[in-house]
Image 1 (tube, one colour):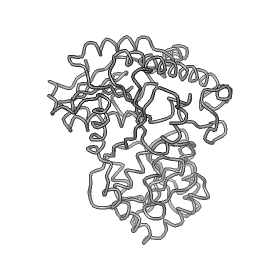
Image 2 (image 1 turned 120 degrees about the vertical axis):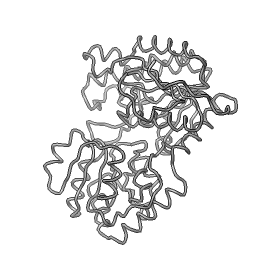
Image 3 (image 1 turned 180 degrees about the vertical axis):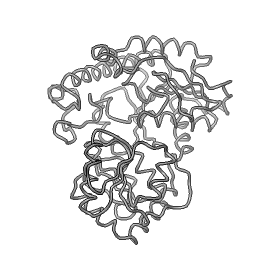
Amino acid sequence: MHVGILTNFPTPKGGAEKVAIESARGLAERGVAVTFLHGIDGPADPMLDHPRIRRVGLGLTDVWDRPAWRGALEGVWNREAARRLRAVLAALPAAPYCLHLHQWTRSLSPAILPVLAASRLPVAVTLHDYFLACPNGVYYRFDEGAPCTLAPMGAACLAAPCDPQSRAHKLVRFARAAATRTALHRGFAERPLALVHVSDGSRARLEPMLSGGPFRHHRVDNPVRVAQGVPANPAGGDAVAFVGRFTREKGADLVAAAARAAGLAALFIGDGPLEPVLRGLPGTEVLGWRSPAEVERLLRARARAVVAPARWLETGPLTVYEALAAGIPAIASDRAGAGEKVVSGETGFVVAPTAESLGAAFGALRDDALVRRMGLAAHARYWAAPMTLAAHAEALCGLYAAMAGRPLAAEAPSFQRSAVL
């Protein structure tokens, strides 16, 4: 079996690239040959160094690194991206069974969609966000600090000043969303696109938004790269931990306020626009980005719980799954897909993204016996049905075989080397 995976970067700049890279590695380890196509060149994640992974860089530029007018035009429709992708697909020594698109907004643009359709290959798209339906990608009103309730792409949507950047950015993103919708309906009418949802909650929200489109909907959990080991000892921790971008929509400010009210320290790993504010708060410790191994070590040593209190309708933050796998209680927003994996009161808490709700949950975490019991339950429940890389690759292979209408091939041959072509 041979599949093509497309995304913007060969390094994990965000959750979408992280999953694309891990999917490629999991498939390769399962015996699948993978052509990993990335729009923007640069150093590759070590996980892509595998004899069954061929890496192909298209040599494009991040639209955020372009002059504003050029970035806007290329973000809506990048003709050069389409030309280069068409040439690369034509030059592959063997056609893939299928193509799997993870992210396209930073370099590839909607211009690649007609190329994918013209290939006549089955195409899947993992919906890490809401960009296929919503112009700003998160279905969230940044002007109101609350999830959106408008129908995407209607007149009210166009008029809403919801973009996190500016009105001009909203207009560009609206144009890109319109171009995406047009390309999908024109190119995939005869061969429907396979949409891969990463949580039940995001599927329940997105499927009605995309009704009437040329889509078939599927559910595949994102992989979690945590090796099975002994459970952590969260009762020995001294802090609640937040891992990721420090933004209001992710609820970083809520963690700081609720921890202070509950008398617990707050540990922040990552960075973001709220970093200067967080650094100035008593009882708050702010670290920069750390490697996955460092993050796990820090959480095992310090965290009584890992917190993901998103205000937006997050599809499925990996930090929650990683905490459960390590045996650390998780506190998830009731707006986030990851909350589906938390048994409230048993392996953590699922709460509304408010300082009051988080404060009540943090107060309960002062009970060592409860924290210890929750950690052990989280570990046992997670490993009873783990979201491992192998399980993820197995689910993808089943999806690809169904899309291609043929059984899985025997183990694929290795490429001579992993390289940018």
